[in-house]
Image 1 (cartoon, rainbow, N blue to C red):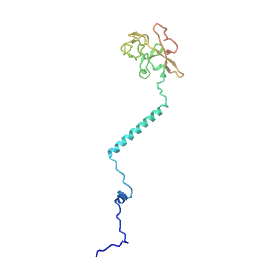
Image 2: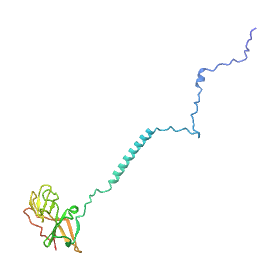
Image 3: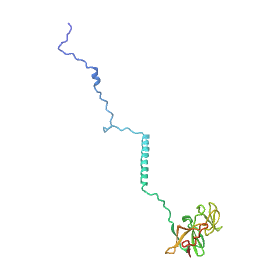
Image 4: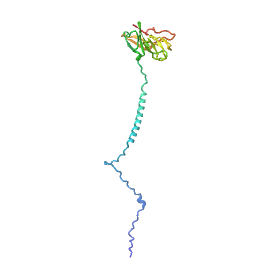
Length: 203
């Protein structure tokens, strides 16, 4: 005789497949370091170099702009040497042309007779600086060939008039003071100012 199950005993119902799928599955824990912190991903040397170059460019750009900003507050002044200076005592100069101050101050000191005067070394043609030629006893412009006597008087070439002379005077100590901002000229066909007070000192 076959066993008949007791109708009072409940029969277990299998769980639906969707319920099993809805159950969250825990991810496997990530590997941690010995201190329990997540390890930092290492950066390749090439990436580090690229970052350094980029940051260098950024900081260089900012520094250049800062310098330009600061430069705005400083005036653009041109500092030139003083036009007033001392050249020594009259006894320091012998008769003739003295070239000691040509390179620095662009002048020649000339002692002639009982006078000392200063020729400003600028050709009256186009402004070049002539050269003193002791063997030829004259000034010669290297640009276009203008020639001047030891007194600075033009006698050859395209120069239209003599070279200018600078203002000279004696200070309280007896030294010669030159002022190249005050010039005495002899315009072509004009009045000769080489005898004006200040164009020479008497010795």
